[in-house]
Length: 389
Image (cartoon, rainbow, N blue to C red; front, side, top):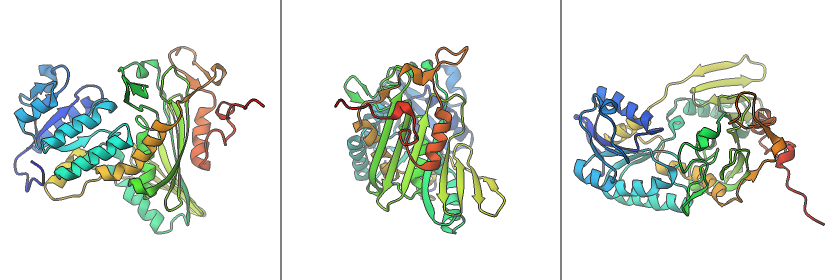
């Protein structure tokens, strides 16, 4: 079942693995592609069957909680996998063993060892594996690269990224694996930089031309938590690439106000800012008025279908997430996140389930501007504890 599907005159049979939570967005995207005649949903793998109303207009897809059984029964060409992080590797490997092509949600694996295992299996089976970094399908990325290569902002000094989001206790209680670094002995690594704001990391690395695992020379991290969880909800990472470039990403789920995450390329004569969820690019240059443009985006499942038909390369193939996985591994191997002292955060009036880190909105922006961490910026809660004499 591996290889291309030349022509694709008929709708491509697909299965959806994980149809609830974020999986619902994939179900609706499949519904859109069914209406366009590009795919047909032949099966759904989930712990409980979908209701008839949820599959209305999608035919009568088979259901099984066992992916291997479902694949053997339905023989799809491709699978969309949107399940808890710690299940990604085994489910993806099951699909690969059946010669099924993949759209696998990010992060592809919770550890670098599992990522390598999956990558080797994908390449041995000669199947396609697209990773669900939707921002990498944006036309904004090549537009930013073209501006930089044309010298619009002079020499590149570094790349920063910032994500300031608001999440409450319910977000970390939505599933047993949420907010966990490990679950029943298995790595999960569900932190701010590895899951909800992972796109900031992957997009910044892509703009730096650092996508493969061998493009990363060093990863520094600062991991903190205001909530009563295992993982980090306020974090920072700086990647030094093998070319010597610096990529710094600051993120929090404890902002006072929700912000639109962005990546900024700093240059000697200006900057380019990309709000990656909006595909919006702004060029600021010394002596010129700002220029702004919104770009189109290619859906990653459609790109996978075009790739299988021999019409396109993968926009987010598994090998192009190797650098991101180096960051995941650095966070996995780092000491557990430092709990912030009670005076470092507060709950806003009327929102007792929220925790806001004092000053974090400005610190996240400053970290992306100066390419340095919270400790370097002078945050008292980020300074190392003094050692006894």
